[in-house]
Length: 324
Ligand code: TXA
Ligand code: MG
Image 1: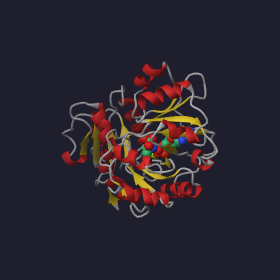
Image 2: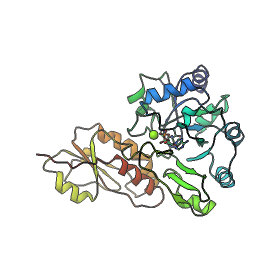
Image 3: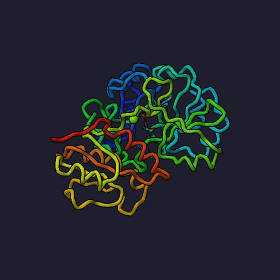
Image 4: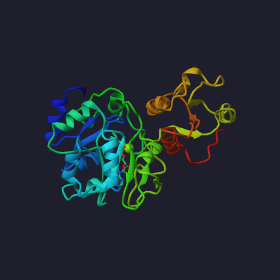
């Protein structure tokens, strides 16, 4: 099931199958982006609503031009600077991309991922790969082959092994339909780094389902099955420790009031990139423990910390919790 044979993945994809693939951000659930039947199967496996469009992956700018009408000048600039990399551009699509891929939008999300195995696979295929994150809809994204196997292993013929993802959080999504480019989803590429390249950008992180563009934008998303609350960990632990069995997801340190093996530290040295790499694995681990409630703190809101905080916030439980 988990296998490192790129040719096997290629042959499965050529014959209309869906295969999990590694990227540097998260694992994707990939299929021929030109084949409507395959796209429908991806939605079905993920239990994903039709209004939530898929990102299309390829391995060169020349190939992008085969399915995109044109690239605005800013798009060309960031593409040259940051591809391959954790950046998705929303670009006007050609008809060869089925409407199902974009949920009816005239724009298609495009990305050249920076992962050697994924790039090799893409270079051997005569079509680009549509690939959402390889998790059931709404759940935490997968950053290791085993994460995919745990949840979708019985639904797909192969998970192409590419080791743990080096970034660990999804791509940054930007759009160009207005004068000032917009960030539609925070992700693996820093806003500050992007702005240095193309000047100021607007933030347009939409939260409502069913809007025309909803990049990873559903308010409740990336969520573990256990309830999770965010805030000051000392205060939250004091509030809930008597009434619930707690798990803790913290940035740098453990808390003596909670059992050691119920705690995940994202980066003891305080490195935000390391924290991003460990985030989804940490959430999955806590979700598998015999606990009632996950408590987590916000990370410093700079660099990739901003994207991590966005994911934590979307994973947070939104109703009042009472334990008797
Ligand atoms: O890093 C990533 O982007 C990973 C890897 C596999 O490349 N993919 C990923 O895909 O995160 P997914 O489907 O889990 O999230 C992609 C988000 C979706 O929430 C979707 O709403 C948005 O991108 N998106 C895709 N195409 C779009 C489009 N044409 N217009 C607006 N939003 C789009
Ligand atoms: Mg996803």
